Length: 275
Image (cartoon, rainbow, N blue to C red; front, side):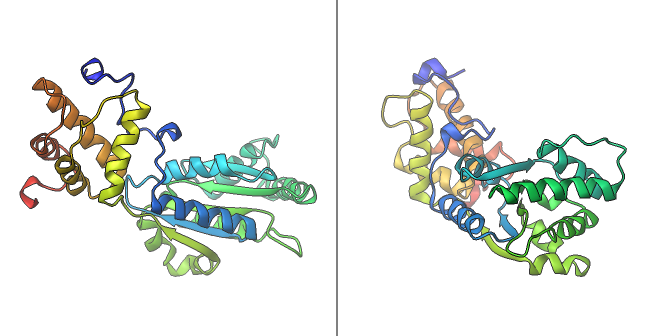
């Protein structure tokens, strides 16, 4: 691989979310601020949407790290669940010892009791649901009913939905219109702008151990921005393939032609013919 060639200690452009490589972009920081304000205000539902690869899972991980000390977090990365399985998953996240054959009434009662205990101890319970666009309609409705659990002062649990734009279409279904009306805070993640792309590339290279200069020149950064449209996951794939192309030619700087080759070989990238 190209690690020794470029003086790297590890691959700088992996596609697995890694908070050690986090670059604070405007969109991500605004989204995180929205989440923290919503949690602080005690609102029931919060929604974050963004296209594939814009960093929703990474945002969720940043949020879990930035939670207030009095917060208890529950995280569901795969919400393609039936209503009952959702309750069981929530109970597991809350560390409740429940039998899998317990009936729905007593299962909900145990969850409600646990939430009341957290509220009495002045702890906030925050449920983060990633890939929420995959949640069946009947499960979304079950989630709305679950949000009815409250004291006279506040909701017993706050629910954060993170998903692709298809989530908005799903929430517009007449059968779950009441849930849409309960979303008090929402934010749409966008891609990186041209300046952010340059800082993003440089930061990830530094974290990966690079101590030189000029792997990605300004023209190359512009080419990567055009090809990826600022989408972080796509940018990582293109940067990785571009480094491979430069390494294959024995070069220590990536040129726009390497980006064009990478884009031609990558699904979802802007076609070189568009530049």
